[in-house]
Amino acid sequence: MSASRRLLVAALVATAGLGLTACGPDDPSTTGAGSAVTTAATAPATGGAAPTTAAPATGTGKPAPAGKPTDGGPEGFCTHEPLPAGQKWVNVEKGTSATALVYKETKDACGVDDVALEPVGADKTATFAPGAKGHLKSVVAAPKDVSAADLAKHINECIATPGNQKGFYPCSSGTYKVALDASGKVVEMWERPSS
Image (cartoon, rainbow, N blue to C red):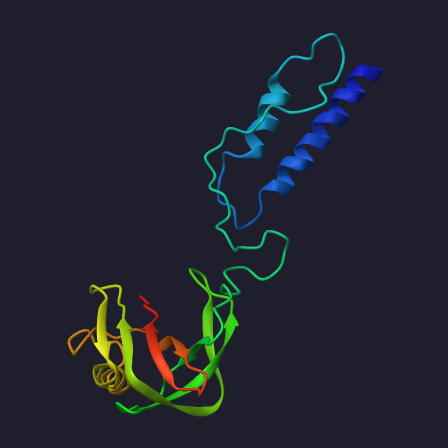
C-alpha cells in the first residue's frame, strides 16, 4: 500500500472515530457527524494527499436542552436558578389555615423537563402576614391571584384529593415558592405548576 493511501486510510479512520464519539446512545439522530464521514469516504482524493478535515455535518439532530450536561454527569435539569433573598422553594404536604402554613424545605434533584424539588427535613410552620397574597398556577387553567384564605382552601383540597381538577382550582404538585418578610412571615406564595 502506498504512503498516500495509508495517510488517506488513517485520516478516514480518525474522522470516523470522531464521528462515532459525537453520537451516543442518547442521540437517536442518524444524520449528524456520521454523514460527514460518508461524504469524506466517497469523495475522491485529489493530488494523492489525504484530506485533513471532514465536511461540516448538515444533519437535523437537535442540540441538547439548556441545563442538560454533555460531560457524562447526571442527565436532566439538576439545579434551579438562585432565588432573590427572602424567597425559597417549599413543599406543602399537610393541611394549612388562613393564618399558618405547614411545609417542608426542599432540595434540588435532577428532573427530565425541569428541576425536581424533593421535600427534606421536619415540618416547619410559618404564619401568613396580614394581606398575604397567593398566585395559583396550573397547566390546565389560567393563573389566579388569591388571598391567604383561598390559598389555604386550595392547598387543603389538593392534599385531600391530589390531582383534583374540579375543586376551587386545579391541583399541582404541592411545590410553592414563598417570600418571607424579615420576621419569617409569609407575604407571598407562587404555586409551581406541574403536569
